[in-house]
Image 1 (cartoon, rainbow, N blue to C red):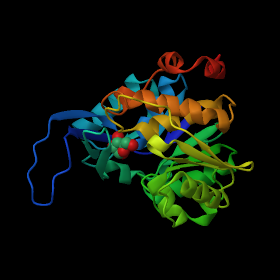
Image 2: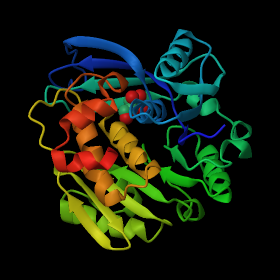
Image 3: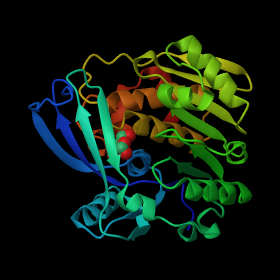
Length: 310
Ligand code: RIB
């Protein structure tokens, strides 16, 4: 079957705690709210793509527990194909997410079944005649590297979101068409501090030398930078007065980029579109549940951007 997007990655059940600040070491701190919801970078990106109307096939692994069944059900309910989601092992991946007063978040992930996905789950047929595969780094790196190799062999474009950041072999990186990372991940990969827009431009240009295609570094409220063959360029963020929760904002940004790539829209136009999408997502709590549908984004977009999907 032909899909718009193949996502190979993680599914986590997220435990989100809304709290005013992080506790000190040894301190017991009282949080405000508890939210339980489906997450994981892979599943989040798949859901945002589906919410934008794309036909998505997700490949991943969940555990034989109540969370695994709930993750499959919710992905299916979001119109993502779950035919290649395997239930393996006892426990699903879990995300423990702390959302602070500012809307910023930090998370700890428990790998669970995400690390039980095997190379044999990544068959050649997954990539044949598929336009784009999206990968992140919450599954074993040898599985990501196999997927890159097979996708490249079948001329399927590769978007790698190296999150959380880890070493990627030079050879695999050289096959990546779109590398998307945040400032922390860019800093890890380029081995330089990425504290300012200028740093990000330098880091993106450095990473651009290592990939086949283009590099985007997202910078939160500072926007994003793109390094392409035309040089490195900065894009300001969309002003958002009501930041509630930034969990999954990077994933919804990637969904927007993927939507544009599938529709032959350049990254120069895709970045402002994707920034609009993630700005919608940070105005509500949670990851997938906060992601906008295409009409919601259309509503948020200024008139001159509406031509992107007319
Ligand atoms: O990007 C946000 C996601 O990161 C959360 O859903 C959490 O599960 C972690 O994977």
